[in-house]
Image (cartoon, rainbow, N blue to C red):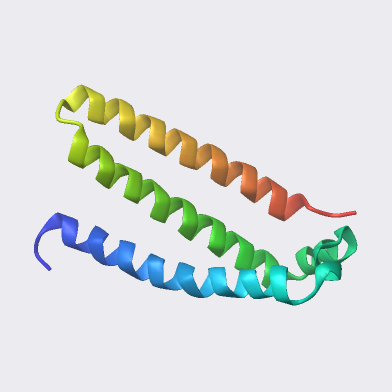
Length: 112
C-alpha cells in the first residue's frame, strides 16, 4: 500500500466491520433484552461498568471517525474548489470533535 489514500481506505473498511459488530451488540441489548433494560436504573448500571463505558467510547469514536471520513469522501467527489474543501474539512472536524466531546462527557460523567 504505497499510496496515501489506501491506508484510509483500509481503516474505513475495518472500522465499518467493527461497527457492524458493535451495532449488532447494541441492537440486541436495546431491543431484544426487554423493555426493562432501557430504564434509567439499567442504563445507570451499565454505565457504571467500565466495560460498557469502553464499549460506548469505542462505538462513539469509530462511528464518528467512520462518518466523518465518509463525509470527507463525499466532499472530495463533489467539491472542486480548494477553499470549499478546506471549509468543509473544518466543519467536519469541528462537528466531529464537538460530538465526541459531548459523548465523552456524557459517558464518563454519567452517574446517579
